[in-house]
Image (cartoon, rainbow, N blue to C red; front, side, top):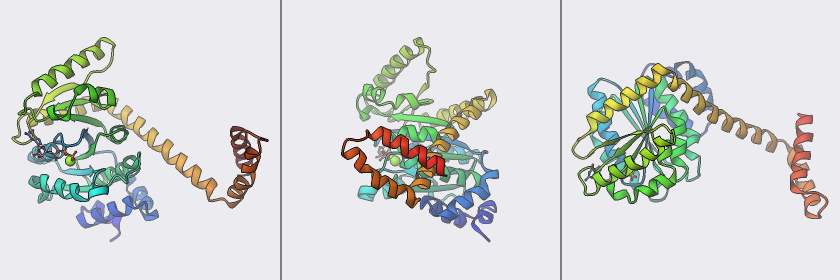
Length: 314
Ligand SMILES: Nc1nc2c(ncn2[C@@H]2O[C@H](COP(=O)(O)OP(=O)(O)OP(=O)(O)O)[C@@H](O)[C@H]2O)c(=O)[nH]1
Ligand SMILES: [Mg+2]
């Protein structure tokens, strides 16, 4: 049985192996994704992002438990930038997600984000495709929202939850950092902690300003992941939002936009490879640097000329 057949027949070991192959960017991975592509597009993909420690993993755990209660199957990708440095956080995630860890209907995969910006976008999208082809009803992607990663996750999924907590510091910080912009639903977690109500009020205030400027405004929901408060409502709202998007065509539109960004990036990478693998191109490049060094040509003119000759030749 090859990996594609294994995945189609619901074999978890094949899925685990396939994820490794895809994560390693191995050529077999692309063959596999190609073979499975006709099965992709059925799962709902939900991103969960937010500052470190706000309770994202705890929420994913609770959400997955509720989804399993409705007989939905779940794939979870936990992208963990810190794990590349400490190696400790992965274990933490596994312990925290213990409620669902032993359930056959849930598949959890932790992956390092490879440190680089855009690392998430590189493989999380494909891992979601594998879960989707495997037949998962929901795919949840958790990532720490620091810088670019929240934008990457938003481009990978159908719906993005941004999680904040009273302890995660100033809500203004979240607004500045661009986290708010990717939110379809804002979750104030740790509602049991002091300051949760104030955070909610501040967020609603900020959103109200956005509404006056004609922006689409996400709803704000409060949860306590540690005792399950508010999770039922959150799951209902996530489902309702996805169903609405499905009905009004915005789901398809978003998938198309995400795919476009993904394809652009893949095409850019492929073109780059195409040239740098060509010795004639690299030799010409090295030889002609001197034209810029000795002042005969600006870097921009050289790039233009080289692109023109390379394309003319190919
Ligand atoms: N009081 C309280 N603590 C919570 C709540 N949700 C999570 N925690 C605790 O907050 C800590 C961090 O929770 P995680 O779920 O690991 O948070 P995270 O956002 O996934 O963390 P990173 O992935 O490391 O960014 C843990 O000790 C949780 O038990 C909550 O609603 N209330
Ligand atoms: Mg986590």
